Length: 125
Image (cartoon, rainbow, N blue to C red; front, side):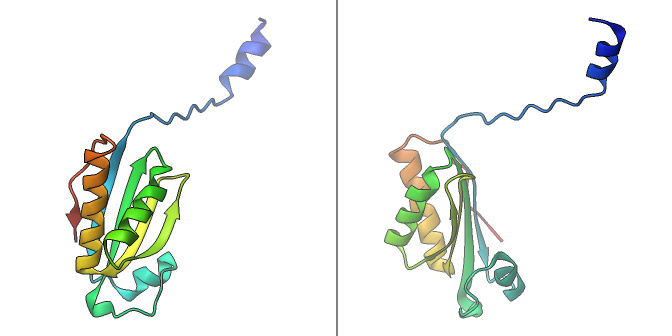
């Protein structure tokens, strides 16, 4: 290796991106009575009674678990799926505060008890 090769290598940036495999829910959050602007910015259904509305956000790995979580959410309460991404592991649900609370609790409980996930506490604002 000559001096030109060394200088060329020093000027290159090398980025290494890793995803650590694990079975976990990293965020489970309920936004009670969000502002209508938040619905619009997220592209969610604006035809809701905002006085009783809530948004639930869940992130998980492996990311495909978001599909299972979406199914659980729909079956356990009257929530609607706002967004589900099997590549990032993100699920957003909308409904009343009690529906969103119920769906997130069901998701956290199922993944912990049946799939042996590490789960976080459900938080709320």
